[in-house]
Length: 71
Image (cartoon, rainbow, N blue to C red; front, side, top):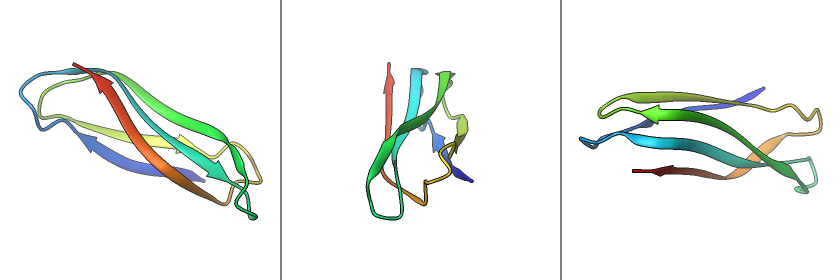
């Protein structure tokens, strides 16, 4: 299983250290930790199709999907 999506850089400048992160939860809503996918550089007007692998077999859903980066 994966959490998949796309981040788009709509600006005219690159972003560095782009990180998409989420909390994985078990069937009782207990956090199993944070998992992420990263890209070193996201160029202007480009896409970052992210895939966060749900490596814990107890993971059934995610929450708190965040994106961070530096200009």
